[in-house]
Image (cartoon, rainbow, N blue to C red; front, side, top):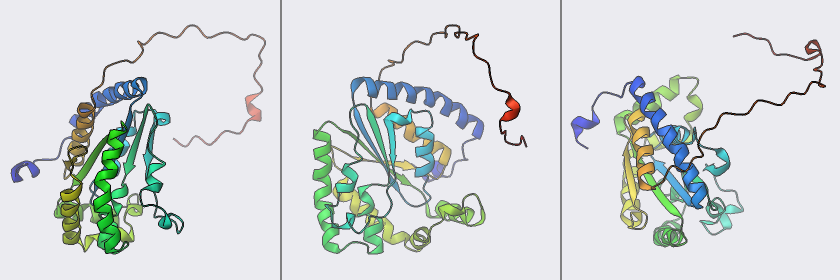
Length: 266
């Protein structure tokens, strides 16, 4: 993408919601196809803090049936989990037939925040870089569809979003101490990302970069790419009008004055 394209005007909300409404319908069709075909789909979302991963995941999952779509956002590992095989706590969240697992950050924590912040040893980091490609090849060989997305945001845009989080009460919870630390380690995270791509951008599971300075465009582009990367057919059942509801003349409702209603302030 050229510098001029990156600096284009932000997408108008009206155009965004119109495009999103069309994608929502396609996402429902997509999930029906995954369930019917018994596919197993893993989507990995990585990127810098405030790059827009969470917002994209929210818009992606909004029209989907949560029973077949699981968002995995794991906290820091417990003392017990730290003694396990590194990939162990992620494996238990992999999908069964007809399911979608969306990782809001994933095993790539080791290549990013753990590496930069010193939460893992150099030996553990090097072992991850050796093991990760083989682990992902194993997943793909088993029949799992694995898609990896990296949300790329400029230094200026990230700083703008951090400042907004710092002053907006509804967004302040998003600004963690780790976010503030990463703010001062921009170059270190860039180097870690470059090295991660060098080792893990494999043919079986390549990285797809999402330009994320414009949140609206990045969400639409990412969702559109997912739909085109996993071909599907419209197998949704045809809509049919509901039959008349059965009447129950013997039923008598209790007096509504005996019930507790919330105040109607709006």
